[in-house]
Image 1 (cartoon, one colour):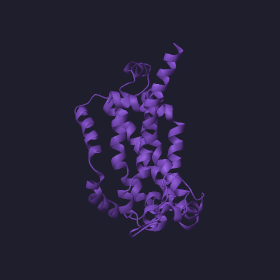
Image 2 (image 1 turned 120 degrees about the vertical axis):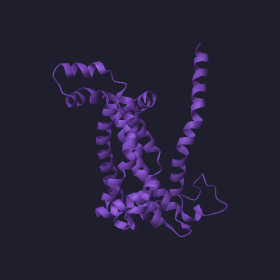
Image 3 (image 1 turned 180 degrees about the vertical axis):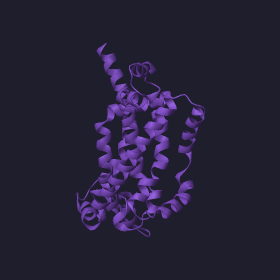
Image 4 (image 1 turned 90 degrees about the vertical axis):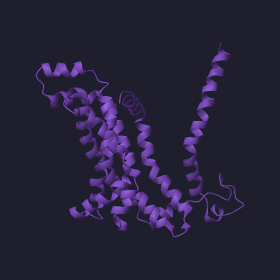
Length: 280
């Protein structure tokens, strides 16, 4: 029995190992490249997966001292946090209405929300650029805070619709019978139960806005106002010259906040994602 249990355990771990390697390999590659000297990075005879000539922190020093990395990170935090907060509030109300309230066309609106999410952001680039210019917020973080919800709200709404449908209506109806209005029932009964789903939507929205490239490149041009992904790409890629060591150092530093957030909220994230995906 013990041998059978041990064999089954090794079988499970063996099946899981390729997926783990696939997921962690990009971070390993970034870490190894960022710790190599330029001579070793561009050496044709060097082994790309190993550091053979000693580790160096020169690439990290260059990113932190010779670029506006700290300012770019702050810009990304402000834009991603603000657009995520706006999208979470709007999508929570929209998802609750579409999942709970009975009104004419509710199914059509629910499907329209999902179809809207499937529209590529590049198709909205021209009309949104005119809107940003007419509002006078070009080349400012507000240009991104106002445009990011155009693709964050449909996705979060679609995800939260599925999660709200997993909560029994009877609990909400009991609150209504006891004298609570619809908003009070949502805030006091539904939202606490839907916390994993809301957290999942927030995490997804923050991650998508953190790494979004098209709008950040098109609507913001001045160096101090750039997002961190745009700043690294424009400052460390000059023509056909790629500063790979500094690029990998910047990419590794940029990914750490997302990794920490996902690791901290892993359990709630998984439960919210599975419930929203199954019931949508």
